Image 1 (cartoon, helix red, strand yellow):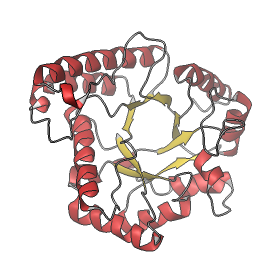
Image 2: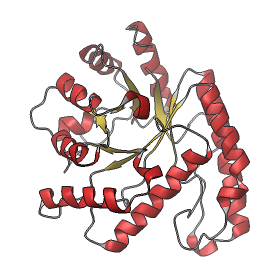
Image 3: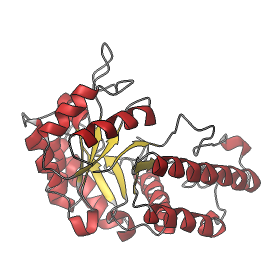
Image 4: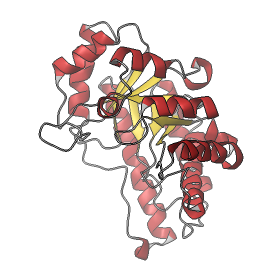
Amino acid sequence: MKIGYPCINQTLDCSSSRTFRLASYSEERLIQTVEQNLSCLRRILEFNVENGLHFFRLTSDLVPFASHPVNTYNWQEHFKLTLRRLGDYIRRHNLRISMHPDQFVVLNSPNPQTVQNSIAELVYQGSILDLMGLDTTAKLQIHGGGAYGDKESALHRFAEVYHTMLPEEVKVRLCVENDDRTYSLTDCLVLHELTGMPIIFDNLHHECVNNGEPMREAVLLAAQTWQPERDGILMVDYSAQSPGERKGKHVQSIGEQAFHDFLVETEGIDMDIMLEIKDKEASAHKAVAVAKELGRI
């Protein structure tokens, strides 16, 4: 089991998601910002290795405006060597990496422009993982999208876009995650049947929207959608409900007993766990300690 956190390290004095306003775009600004982002990413990865945190989600903002028409610069060539060195470090230390495009990536949108923009963003993020030389166990995770008043049609529209419009290098990395409002695990299983995409399981979202599956059964169903040679083992997003907040809002800090109980409930199921908890690496340290006590790491 590998445990980690997404995008931002709150201990270090740098960010790998620096960006700037579209109105101030220039190639010089782009190059300078990406250099800073990749330099900080290296520091974050080194911190993670030193602290036994072997799962990390890269920020979508490594290259600002990468999928926007304003950016015509060949940043892939410019940063090829730097990205390859980062990938070498990741492989050398056996880190698991993922990316999670923002909510504007909606493959089943009825709006063709939204679909095109979504594909462009997936191509960009997949290319980061490709340029790093990472295998297809490094994943891109997205949500199912909207239901648009007819979920069955929306599911099939997603599958049609997947099969007819997505490049193969995106398809081999793409996963779908059950969400907290629209697409339950059962809906994601339909998408898996239609596309072959593995399902990233989110425990908090499952608590928000489900079809009555107990937690262990739900995790097993998601795990069975992963082909180990192509996909690696199941990725799980773990969080808990923030008390007194809207349904689905992530907790500030991990509840160690609740995490312990989740690991006990899923004993024997291979998984890597991404902690979607607001205090990031602080909770990841605690989670690793709990997992070690249980012999899961």
